[in-house]
Amino acid sequence: MLFIILVAFSALFVAGCAAFFSIKGLIVLFSGSSLAIGIMASSLEIGKLVAASFLHTYWKHISFLLKTYLCVAVLTLMGVTSLGIFGFLTGAYQVHSATVGTFENKIEALTTEKTAIETGVAEHSERIKSLTTLRQDQEQRVKDAGNYKAPREQAYKAIEEANLEIKQKEESLTKDRERIIEIEKDISELKIGMNTTTDVGSFKFIAAATGSTVDEAVRYFIFALIFVFDPLAVTLVLAWNKLLEARREKKEQEEAAYIASLKPVEFEGINAQDENASSLKKK
Image 1 (spheres, rainbow, N blue to C red):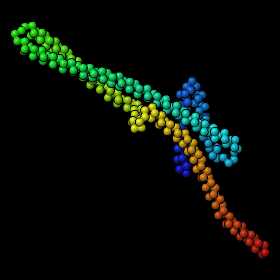
Image 2 (spheres, one colour; image 1 turned 45 degrees about the horizontal axis):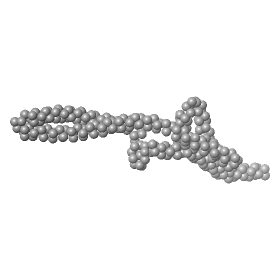
Image 3 (spheres, rainbow, N blue to C red; image 1 turned 90 degrees about the horizontal axis):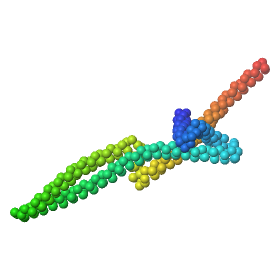
Image 4 (cartoon, one colour; image 1 turned 90 degrees about the vertical axis):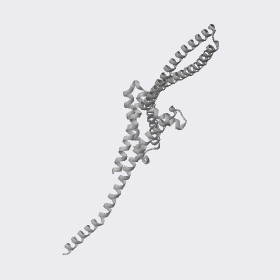
C-alpha cells in the first residue's frame, strides 16, 4: 500500500509540475487573456489525465471510435503541454540570455579597448627605442663636433627634443599599462558576475564539451526535458491505475479464497443439524 501511495504522489506531483509550467508557458504566449488561458489549460490538463485513466480502465468495454478519439486527444494534449513547457523554459532562457549578452558586450568592448591600448603601447615602445638611438647618435655627434659651435648646438637641440618626447611617451606608457590592469580586473569581475548571477554561464562548459553553441546546448537540454516530462506524468498515472487494479484483484481473490474455506464448515454444520433433527423425530 505504501508503494501505491508513493506512485500516486509521484504521478500527481509530476503531472502538477508539468501542468504548472505548461500553463505558465501558454500564458506567456497568450498574455492578452492570461486568466482565460489559465482556466482552459487547467481543465485540459485534468481532462487529459482522466481520459488516460478511463482508457486504461475501460479499454475493452468502449467502442473503437471513442478509443480513437480519446487516444488522439490525450496525445494532442501531451503535445500542447510539451509546447507550453518549451515556451516557459525558452522564455526563462531568453531572460538570462539577454543578461549574458549584456555581460558579453561589455567584455567585448573592454577587450577591444585593451587590444587598442596594447597596440599603442607597442608603438610607444618602438618610438622610445628609436628616440634613444637618435639621442645616442646626437651625443656622439657632440663629441665628434669638437669646437664647432653649429653642429654642437644642432645636436643639443635634437637631444633635448628626443628627451622631451621620450618623457611624454613614457608617461603615456605608464597610463596605458595602468589602464590595461584596470581592464583585466573589470573583465575578470564581469566573467565572475556572468557565471554567478545567471544560469546560462554553466552551459558554456556543456557547449564547449559538445562542440556546439550555448543556444544549441540549451535547446537540446529543453528538448530532453519536454520529451520525458509530460509523458512521464501520464505513464505514472497509468501505473497508479494498474497498481490499484492489481490490488483490487488480489483483494477479490483473497475474499474468494476465504469464502471457499468457510463453505465446508458451513455444510458440516448444516448436516449435523439435519441429523439431530432426524433423530429427534424418530424418538
